[in-house]
Image (cartoon, rainbow, N blue to C red):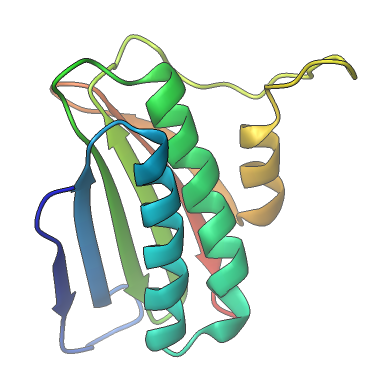
Length: 144
C-alpha cells in the first residue's frame, strides 16, 4: 500500500466533491481486506453510517476483481472514494485494460462470478472507464 491521500474540499454545488480518498494497494488478498476496512471507516467518518456497509462490500468486490482479473506483477491497483452532496462514488483502477468486466449468470455450483451482480444490486449506477493504461470500474451509491 502506498501513501493515502484524503482530501476535504469546500462544497459548492451538488456535483462538487466534498471528500476524496485515494490509495494505491499491492495486488494481494490482504489489500482487499485493508481497502474494505478503510472504506467503511471513512464513510462513517464522513457522516454516512447507513452507507458504510454497502460501500465496504462494493469496495471488496471491485478490489477482488482487480486482484483476480486485473493484476500485473509489480503494478498496483487504486481505490478512489469520492463524496459529493448526492452520491458516494467508488472507483477501482487496475493495469489490465484488455480484461473488461461484464455481468454474467453463474451456474448454481460456481464458486465465483457473482461480484458484479452484487455491485449492480447495491449501486445506483456502475460502469467501466478505459484508461491510458488499464481500466477503472466504478459504482455510485446515492445519498438517501
